[in-house]
Amino acid sequence: MSQIEPLAELVKSQTISQKVSKDGVATRFLRFPLGYETIGLLPLERLVEVIKVSPKAILPIPRVPHYLLGITNRRGEAIWLVDLLYLMGATHLSQRELVPEVCMAILVQGEEQAIGLLVEQVSSIEVYDLKNLQPFPSQILPAKLLACLEGYFIDAQGNTLALLNVDTIIQAVENLEQMIL
Image (cartoon, helix red, strand yellow):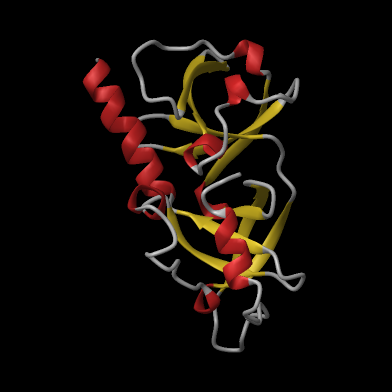
């Protein structure tokens, strides 16, 4: 069970309208599963590309944090892959009972190169008003996890939609990359 699963229960009782208000700003997001009941969102303007990646094609790198699975090749460029589910508190990809033959890497642009956020699938593109973004209660989630999330929305079906803080994830990978080189 993910560390953010209790949050889904906490916020189910709240009803937040996701319609874009007349003076609000419509923002488009890529939607993908982050756990059993939690869904992730990534602002579309941060998206470079979504690519298919076989877990067998990931080259592990020794002595890096467990959230970094390794690198994969994208048109001759080495791309760091982050196990996004593991970062959110799930079991590491290498220890999951059911590992899909193909995962999706959501590529976001770092300072020097693209970084892949590995998820099992992507669902859709959705529009939400940033005025409806709610902060995560700090007493529910660990500080390390809170740093990776900007807040959450509740969709019309009552699902928790966690908005990723892409900059924090990119910074963690780039800081590590500088230490290795």
